[in-house]
Length: 467
Ligand SMILES: [Zn+2]
Image 1 (cartoon, rainbow, N blue to C red):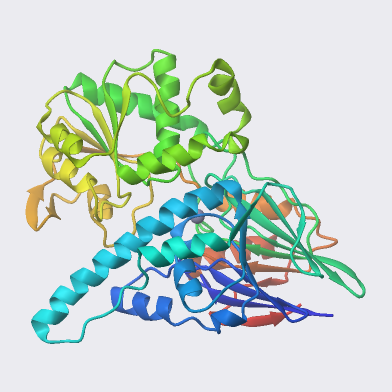
Image 2: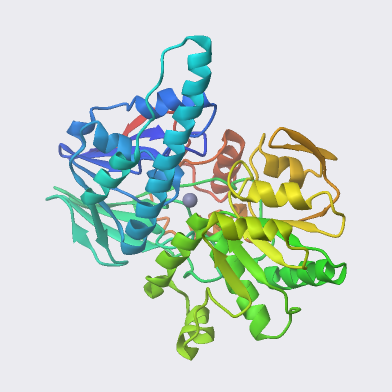
């Protein structure tokens, strides 16, 4: 009996991941991500689900990032009552992140409504509120890596390490049919080998259908292994000038990886004795979730830290800051130090205060460790624009700007291709490329075809395939 897969989000784009699998009448939703884009369009797309949520039997979630998980509260609010399967670590992360997302949705609606009231327009409802985020958590079912679980009479689910963020999984679905078993593999977001803290991606060999992301389908990254030396150099040079290092950083993954690398450097006595601050309540909460999941840590993290009774995310020079009063105290301090803060693209949060206070001083460095999307303050700083706007003020950017791209949690083009080449060609029937801008997806498709495999599809939004 054939089964269907329909691509409902992250088709030829990178946000709003959502794919619907139907096997013998059972509907399984893979991901339910928030579509991020212009406010009005995003609001409509996220609110209008392309199916009746009550008709979905269950959901499988590959990892906690909001572009994969962020619309779950909406799905539940509109009537979805089934199980949501994910790994244990994803369960814990998503609980923190959906509440944070609800807070953003509430604030966003408040902002829009203030404008609407001024113009005499009707008020809008937030996409979802805190109570919705809390409500949906009751439907999560955490399972370990490589613990095959039958989720319907025909389908067995297995999670394998994706090496992308804590808890991230490659989703492997074994589908029993009259004439044998078919395997459908979905990469979620595919990570990279040698990232600090988490394990490397597991290579799947046997699959009939392969759905792969393609965020960096047209680019390769600097090797992860060079990052430690690059970080050491930036810190050394800035401190020698008497400056501060300001790091806009994503709360999930990037912050912990950076802290891990700094901890290693301190253990090796390779850094000057400066204070390091992680100033973001979300980052503090997420780091606590990391500590709960040593099963996700790689061999190096065990050997260097856990086996010596050391906390990879804590050392004597590092302080986590939760309270806003303590964050304000940092503004007045003139001592050389490093401040790691969120949001990652400098669109909101405490990082804005630190940037405003520090980018006018040429002794300081803004260290960029993550992807900066177009039209964000982070991108303008990365482009070293001479003047930037923060809190409505025009501020000259005189600080040094250093960009380290080796921390990327997404596989680069070469790594995506290598992963594909590890699949058994004799079994593989079709490859679907999702989660990438059209150029990235096309580029990866081209590389796969060049390798001699022709059955590659880049689905359109809403396109359905019977397999
Ligand atoms: Zn992701």
